[in-house]
Length: 368
Image (tube, rainbow, N blue to C red; front, side):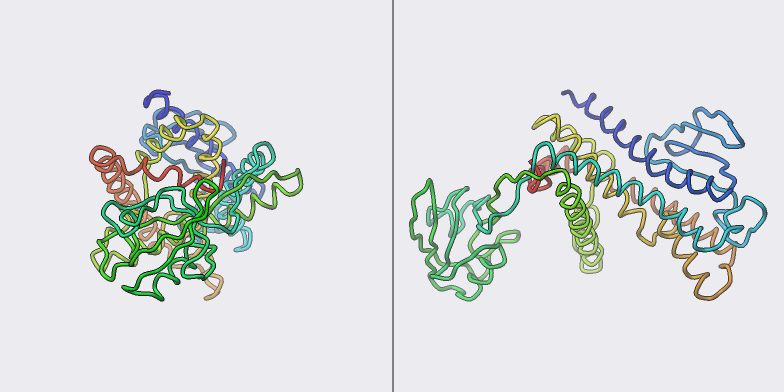
């Protein structure tokens, strides 16, 4: 598949995910009798619009994201008929989280289908080497990618943490690794470094789990899909947290940890080359990411609006309307600027290192 077709495929997937998300807001708003002024796909300016039942259904020129415009949503203090502030705070919360819920449900449904039809790869409790650094003690000792490590100095290791702890317990001292290669066990000795190069550990290997295929029946698949979904969102949240924490200390920060539309489009191209069915997996992961980002307390996004509803519930009065509107407007501008910066960083990585494509197998390590 060409890059152009991959971009179009990505835009189609993104449009579907956004449509599902906004449909959640739209349906709950209508159910509670709210006035929905506009249901838009993309970011304005508007390219096309048609009005039906008091709502403008629009397509906008920037094909990223979408929105549902509800009367009075920028200020809860407005409480006229059909406005956001006219319903109680519980119903407001339902409207705000409906989009996140729809994306989560869609992701679980897609993953359930994948687990049911294809099964998935699960850790076996063993670890193997997935990468050996050039010039490292591991390379000098003859370790290779695919080697399974079962013991370090007689100590059983079944996870990357076990391996790291065992190595840290023997700084600058020779250690004996029990390694299985092509069905044969061998003992390989090496001496861990005390000051390894940046990005390398004391031994100079990247450790990953040994995986095996496991099939799930119709009632197990949704359970496993739900577990995977929350585990994946937890990992993404952890990466985001690390990126934010690294900013004051001069770390690479958000730009190197996250990918924007361009980066995801490039990832789409890479994963489709591996297997066209991967687009379903990617759609599920994007849906989970969309749900997570929208539930965070960021002004202008669902989580930010929900935060104001919760604040108003605690103080038992609606937030200052003008200040709330200004905060959401400022948040929207910041989000757009962040998208621009991340997109620029994506382009730099694609042109200079193509590092965006280098972690594709890591993204899909638990899914076939």
